[in-house]
Figure 1: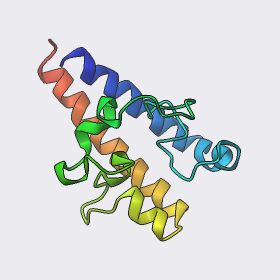
Figure 2 (figure 1 turned 45 degrees about the vertical axis):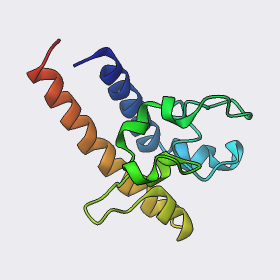
Figure 3 (figure 1 turned 45 degrees about the horizontal axis):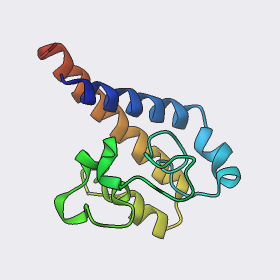
Length: 123
């Protein structure tokens, strides 16, 4: 697995741990964001109020459907469930609890797939 995919795996593991430890719920008011991705190192612009990096430089960009890559926050359009739920949709419904649970499930599955690929292709 190329180094950039190992980096993605590390970011996804961090994000999952953050969610499992209740970090999003604890920090969201403090950070002023309703998005779990934007409030952590998963976001390429984390801590940068000017958002100087383009989203296409982000590790999560590979998971974004082609037709959503030009959205303001492409990571909000990653399909997280079999029914295609996204952070954007769950933000519209104002259902942060559901969003966190769906995101945790997606992270666990994505991490497992990437780890499986890592064991098959150790390069």
